[in-house]
Image 1: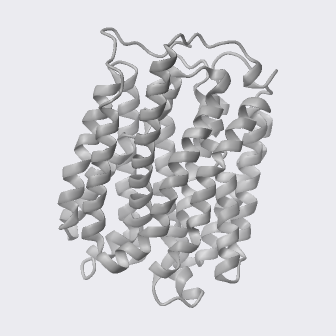
Image 2: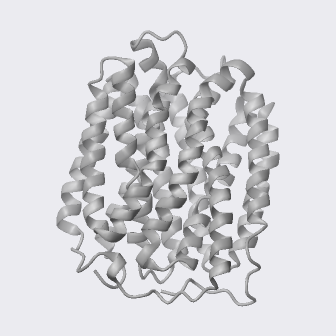
Image 3: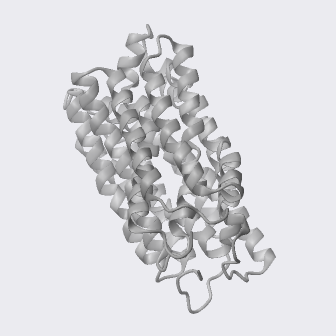
Length: 395
């Protein structure tokens, strides 16, 4: 496959990103009724059973990226669609906590395919890679919003099992369409031509180190917020809004508004120095988390929108750095290594979320998140100084 990714394939890759994030957050959104169904008194006690999904989401990126480069990205995306759909249907029929944990872990394994495979497939030979990454980020976070609204509605009217089963069928349907629409690859990406990158090896090593450290801290914030926002909203709106479907719509609104930050950031990445943009967005996270620690009601809701804008707005930068500094022949493998480290480590956030909130409360967690944002800021400050004239990454 040569040239830019065809429009139809791009649209399906955007949809895949939405599904990827949606599936991983259905459980966090529906955890209260699932906990009640399985005999738990508190939702916090069930959260650790989902940690396997997020560990595999991270560590599975390593073999997924390798297979994407050496075997083919189209093949891997087909496995993604059908595997995600089948494992979601499996979650829907579980009858106990350990069956649930195993099915969620399998879901996490298939979900690990998208980021190291789908994104390099999307940006290959793109004329405006920042914009493509931004739109893809928007799609992914709309999937987060979709998890909030559809799960809330399905749980209310059809039960939590339908919240997994219906999206599972949608994923399988998308896989069928992708099989017909996506052009076949003439050869695996690893056997293709060089993409023209001539950066100094020491510069590339420095960027990859900074990118990995920043990705770990950013992924911690992403997991804490996206897995905890629903319960944070429910607790801080007690006595104001109680209906779970309405709370789901409110949370979806937070994610929809915040998601558009990625498109704006993507446009800016194609035009302005990446380092200065990244520093500016991460710097906003610190005061917003500190303010949210003591807020409640509608003030909390406004701050939640703002800190999610800052969290989502930081997401495109790691992919943009890979596009700018890494040859296409090995992008899936580099992405896989980065994701395995960052998502694997940050899966601890999912395990710790319930116990930390149960023992210390949301105020302590949000304050700690401000400290994590400071780590991201320190790492990003070490990026190489940009050249006087910055243009889109060479293709």
